Image 1 (cartoon, rainbow, N blue to C red):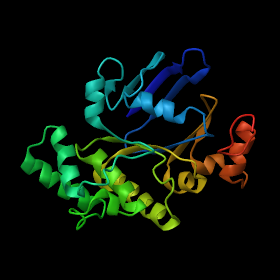
Image 2 (cartoon, one colour):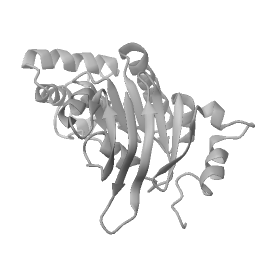
Image 3 (tube, helix red, strand yellow):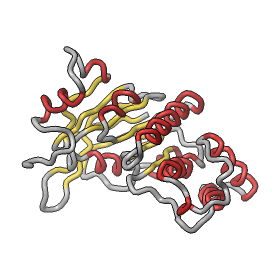
Image 4 (cartoon, one colour):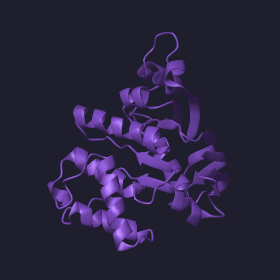
Length: 246
C-alpha cells in the first residue's frame, strides 16, 4: 500500500527534515509512526499525501506513483491533519455532503454517503448540529468522516487523539479497528502516545532526526520485558516528545 525508496526532504538553508526514508506498509496494516517533536514524522506524512514535494527519492502510494500521478494518489487516500477541519458554524450533515460532492458525487449520492459515514463513526443524529457544538471526541470523528467520504483504501491520521480524554481516545481506537476490519482500510498514523501505539498498531516505525531508527511489532520492540518508553529511550537517548538538546 505504501512503498518508499530514499524519500528525502531538505529545506533551503536547513538540515534534512526527512533523510532517505525507505519503508513499506502492506494492505490492511495499521502502522504507527513514532518519534520526538521535530523527528520528521509530519513532514514524511505530508510528502506521502502529496502536500509536500520531496527533494529526492520515490514512492508508490495506494498503487500510484507519488510524483508521476499525484491526482490518482489523492483519489485513493484520506488524510486527517493534526488541526482538523471542522467548521464551527456549519451543520455536520451539510458539511459532509459538500465534502462528498467535491469528489464528484451527485447531491443524492452525497447525502447517502454522508449518512453512511455518520453511521460508521456513531455520529447519526448529529446531522443538524454545527461543528462548534460538538465535543472534542465527536469533532475528531467528524474529521475522519470527512476523510472517508470518497471511500479511500488508505487513511493517514496525524496524531488523531491529541487532546482527547482517555474514554474518547479508547473509543476512537475502536473506530480505527473497525475501519480496518469492516472496510478493509489500511491505516498509517503518527502518535505521541505509546499506549496507543502498543494497543492499536500491528507494526511501529520509530523516527529520529529524519531517519527511521527502529521498526517492528510492538511486542518485538519490547523484548526483555521493557516498556515502549524504555525502548524509545534506548534508541534515541531521550524520552519520547523531548526535543533534541533539551
